Length: 205
Image (cartoon, rainbow, N blue to C red; front, side, top):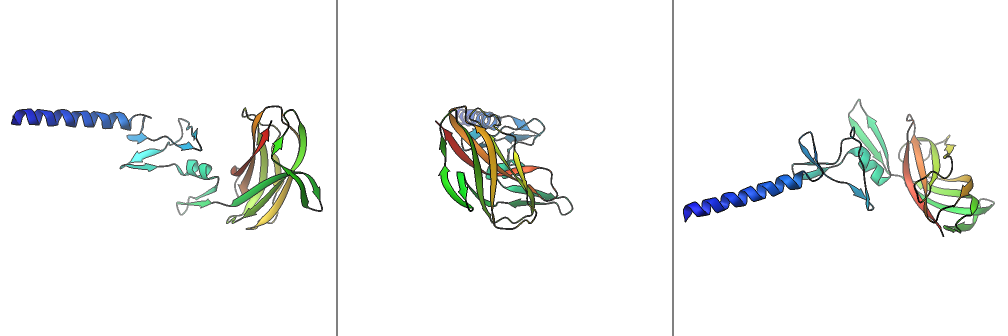
């Protein structure tokens, strides 16, 4: 009876150990650590072979800082001298208008007729910006993931914590039905990269 109990315990231990190994390798391994999957708003984040993926370390999920920054739509700065990462999350609120009179928005919109071509202005209200920026960039992506226009950049000569900004865009063709995404990105001082800090949708019907 005692031998049978020991055998049963060994089988249970083997099954649990096997299950743990299988569970830890569902998404593969990276340098001895189990890889975790990152899903943001139902979209799975893809990582290149040269990237460090999300990992499970000592039972806790560890996310790469760049991936987390992108998911939060924030700005990331690395200070190599002090080995310190700085994360900035400004508040950016956008809306669109086809007419402007004395800087007052007239006819805001979020839905357009499919096949229409439009000129409009992207208004952005920015606050809680705790780092300096050189410029902003507005881009528009179609439902199929294609860039609709060449990105529009606007220099910021005097970076402030709070400000309003308007960026005109011209000749935007809404040829597809579905969701167009307007992306608002910032370029930090001393950096050549843009980071998306806000997105807003336009529906083409």
